[in-house]
Structures are given as C-alpha cells and as structure tokens.
Length: 169
Image 1 (cartoon, rainbow, N blue to C red):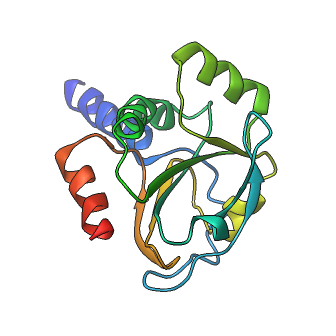
Image 2: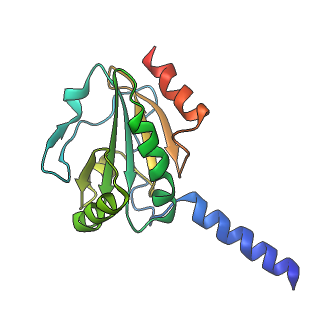
C-alpha cells in the first residue's frame, strides 16, 4: 500500500510541476534561431505594448494564468528579477485565457510591478504555440527566439540571470 502512495504522490508532483493547460496550442511553435511573431497587446492599465517597439532589447515573455499553481509559484521570483533591471532587458508577462479582473486582483494583492499584458482569448499564445502555462520565451535584440522554457522556473536564480545576461552581451 505504501508503494502505491509514493507512486501516486510522485505522479501528482509531476503534474503540478509540469505546467497547466489543455495542450490546445501544440501546433506552430516558433523555432529557436528564427524570428518570433509580432504582437500588440494592452496591459492592465491600458498601455499598448508592441513587440516591434522593443527591438534592441532582450525580451522575456512569460505566458501565465491566475488559475495555474506553477505560474503563481514563479511570479515572486519574476518580481525580484524585474526589480533588478538589466540595461536593454524587458520582461513582459502575458495573462492568457484568464480574466483581466483575476489578474488585476492578484497583481494588486501581491504588489507586482512588472507589465501584465492581456491575451484573454489566447490569440498571442496560439501564435507562439504555447503548450500550456507557464511558458517563457527569451528573445534577443534582433527579435530572434533564443530560449523556450516550458514550466515554472526560479527567475531570480544565478542560472536564470546568467542566461539572460548572456543574451545581453
């Protein structure tokens, strides 16, 4: 009986840490080394963000949702990363398939200051071929996809910061 409990616990851990979503975005992934799709989205305060306006910066785009435990689990580390800005680096988070009100409430309650762009229908997520959330894309200064991370991460770790800094040089 104890062996079954261990196997069940490991299975649940795997599900929780692998990300959330129904995998409906599995087709059309941007390719490493190629340009990513352009987009225009509004953030929680109504500001318009165009990816094209960020050329010359390394851009981190994180797709997430309030209903996703791994997403919520990485947001604090993203806030710490955002508070220690690097020159020519821009973090964007995209709230996908979720209510803007839910996102605004979480951001207000947790006092997050990073940009939260709204993609309530998942159109940009679909263009990026996300397989669920969280999913993160690191784009170089020329708009080329350099890294794709599926699942949650600790964005304030030395490893993650080094990965971003390597793209800045």
